Length: 492
Image (cartoon, rainbow, N blue to C red; front, side, top):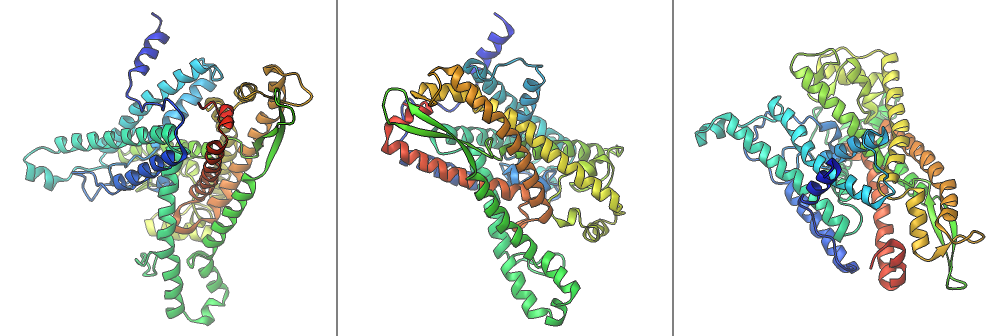
């Protein structure tokens, strides 16, 4: 038995959510999706038993699109799933692991390896935070139970592992029995909650001004004079602190994503057996969706985690940190930009002054923006190409689906190679253009900031995922009305 056979046998024994044996009706899919969503919110409100209040959230600035809840059972969110995907895609892309992802057998092997790697990543992401003192055990609880801090630390690790595994299986449930993907659903849930909080939160910030947009405007109207608001300094105050820029950014990004999601190239199709039966296969501008942006930000987050852990041990050659915020070194340039406070020089100086640290020079801020832009655009292209291959959206798998559905491209012979020539003409090019475009759009959204500090990347993901979810629901309803359409998607 070869190593490949041994690994396949092992992967097949991993716990998994059973796939439906027949078509799942739309109402049932809807209930499964809503059930998982409710479970996600419930888990987000289950605190880790034994965690000290002095613990630090390493992924605080990336929390929006990691879909986790700080201090809860789902602390890691989708982080392990995304990190496992990054590692495997890079290994396959570099041909260190040789797989033909258009081959269903290799694709199944890839998915099995990814699941196994997710379990490994849960441990690898939790242990450094526990052993590095970022997630701290509660000394009071240890004393009350009469056990050592090591026992509480072990209990925390067990809880984090259970939470990470639950997220993995909940994602599987949604993918197989529900609508869309669990990863997307969790991102939308977390960021929507942040946006709602960012609109209605009455709690004051460090300056005494309410955090929520509406309470903030009421407070400003009652306590700030009109002569100041109409001055140059007052206009800047309202744009940044008053939340007007964040509101405009949120609305503009929403409209842009909806417009871009509807931009597509349509490949004409005709049924080979039914005369007059025609259709179109849409190739969207954002063909790979915006999920590759999660991979880019997750890569940055993991790099930052390494820097934070080293800095906490006194090794500062990569940079020093204030909590999870890099203050200097290469880690500063590799960190993600989330709002105007990360690139407007006066606001950057203000932020660094609150940390008691020396602010970077203007050229360093510009280099930070350039580095983030490069990572988003280049990373968007690379991960978009990887994404369509690993999810069966490439030119060859798409041609196979069209052929299996009984459709053909008018003017071409009805065989897979002819269809693949046409799909090869469009899909790779649109994927590259779409990956670069979504990376640039993410950068703009991140520079301007958003309501609720959800981050430009988070808002972009949310709008796009919700739009795709709407399309998935429409598609599911269409398949309920016309069962023959299910054959195109390989459903029975």
